[in-house]
Image 1 (tube, one colour):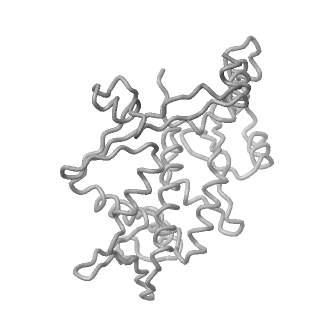
Image 2 (cartoon, rainbow, N blue to C red):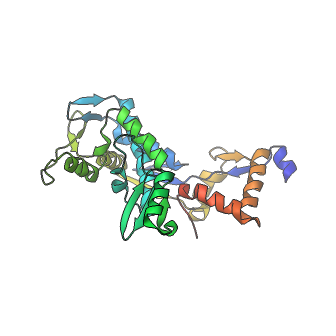
Image 3 (cartoon, rainbow, N blue to C red):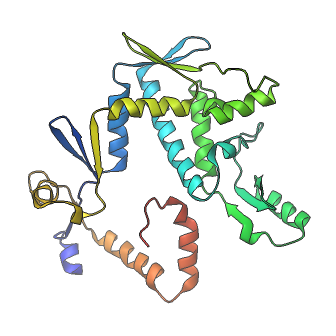
Length: 285
């Protein structure tokens, strides 16, 4: 096998992750990112995005960038939700001066405490006077969320309008009436109609709703879910299939990975899991 790999004769089939159907047209999509790109392209086609407070109309490229940032933010939020962290609550703990996001959450007596550094964690542990290791959660997504929020602000958007909940906290902090009917912050419009929306989260949801109207999306978990015709169209047909050549470097890395995950040494395996567990999207147990 090493000789075959070295000579470049080994390839791995890359079956699609999704099949979408619109009317009589069917299309296979290789990755989740490609699906996101397609939905955002279809959803914003013909629409303009307006910031209502000053009637600023964003360019199409700006609108595209905003939507992609919101998709990434939504995914990171879902990762946190899976760990038991309420995402909108977490966003409200963005530091007002440094713009940093908490990197730890500690639950003590049913209350969540968000901490921004190792020093804060050490001080909190000392103050509690007991071990908090079992109730402490490290938030690996913090840095990525920080960077996305900064980019959103640079584009001219208020990140406190991400969701109705974050907007409510901003209003309460500013002394505004909590029960006052909120005003729309954004508008999506074309030549015929417009849709006023209160939050960035709603903006993304509306664009996805427009894109998927009349569309059926099927996600494949494996080749076993495909019928023979689909298997031929996506994986076997030389004219249409996508294949990945296995290189010697791939084989070396795979061997290292196998050693880490299946070897006798526990510590490297634990370190790998701690470093990459937050990136797992689908896990079969």
